[in-house]
Image (cartoon, rainbow, N blue to C red; front, side):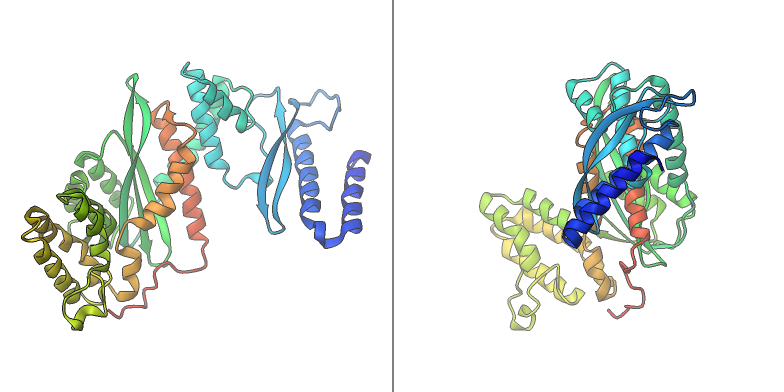
Length: 406
């Protein structure tokens, strides 16, 4: 270690000696910055201000970044580089989450290179420490990342008892125009009692052909043993589910059911209360009153009784709504066939909505319009890999199979 690094280490130690554990966060930040500077020198093949024929670029300042550590949230100066080919330098110590960051960079860079750049695109590039990217850099980086993500999307699957399916929409360019693209995704709970992201696909709609192709790809990868499926009632998904996984019990998402009921209400007064009535519907007899809810009844028979009373209460004032409730709400009661301990997790597709869809929305927001299907698939895949890895390492079971008492 040269004298400059010795001096930096001494300064860090002096700060610790002077202030003690109370300043451990700032001490950690300075030590972390020094480590990243050393890593940059190794990447460039030259020390600070060193002239050597082996140098592969030069230092290009720093970018401030806040990171969470056991010592608390600290601000560090992340070193940047320039003047070299290949992927931009990024410290290995910050590699967690790097796939999705790289995918964002590639999406924005592709916009820039294809001539659809805006000031916002350039601002996003600067936010990730990119001053400029050539088409060759994008091509090389995309190849490496795409190979990794394709391997994850096609990895073998196995037994999955519970399956949750959902989709969200993003904007992307297709055939020279901006289109809404459906991002189809699936999560499952298998023998290890953990949630796993099983796969993702990008299509121009949720038509049956797209959902069917996606589900068939999961089966081709070894998906088996599916007993219970949770999803909304999209027509394309319904038809595909019946064709590919017709033997599984289907639970219609109770959250989406309640929203649909609101749309079928004939006036504002009923719209205000129908959702709550599904959640907290009290049956008329004292025998059922203690359970207090259609969705959260203790047994299927009690839920069916609550539904019958709800339907009867609207038979005269809102007959179309009553008929809709009678025909559709039973599809949201399949969860009562499961052990009681499993029901809370599988009443709705909210485990997918909160953990997956909201994270996709947050992370794709800055791109706004993806320049191609490949760039959209790349970013959502990278995000889902991170979520899947986090779930795989979770020490707490999501569903315990030994809890089988109904």
